[in-house]
Image (cartoon, rainbow, N blue to C red):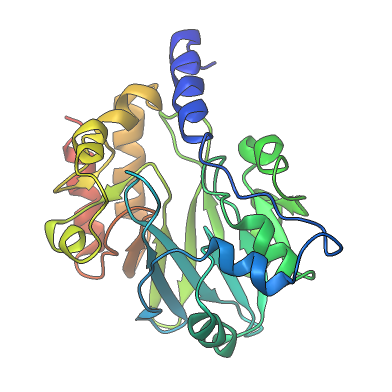
Length: 275
């Protein structure tokens, strides 16, 4: 059972970030067009970049002082797309996204990363919306959920890893690639390198000091304070991922530069920071 103090602290953390909410989407009778609604959500972002065969990412700049965010695109075995932590892109980038495959599944990874989720569902009515069981009631505040990630995604060859030593909130997703594996995290690991922050600078650097997140790959100081319930269990979980996932080629996080070199060793380094 999660300690009451940790649970209450986590709720305060989530309450703060939940203040950042999607702009209300009007019904078709009240709005000019779906295109106008979409455009109202488009914020500055980078281009769609390939990380490996069947895997891409996009970096978006969030408003106010929040750090940059990442969307991951993954081609499923049937050549449709899985979208993790959706970001509304400009018209040209959305055309490129659709050229990669028809959007089929959208993972809303936790109760924070849901800003553009309802917009994607409106644009793609057949999109299957999934989320971790722990996040379902919060995700459904903004978009109907079709299924639980732990139940739906294994049917597509995706392994859902439940983090140990942390308050239940999100999962790590192991994606099969033609030549190896990828791991997709959300907020339990950051990788805000200096080169990444120079390319995609947050509007205010104070947020990095507050998060305790800049310059390394690992859980943030804020994450330790609000999410962590057992440091050793979390450290051993990261080490187990590094030891047991063969041919790990890519690590993606929701905030920071993707890792494409020495991925298993980088996981061990993140674990070692907890010693």
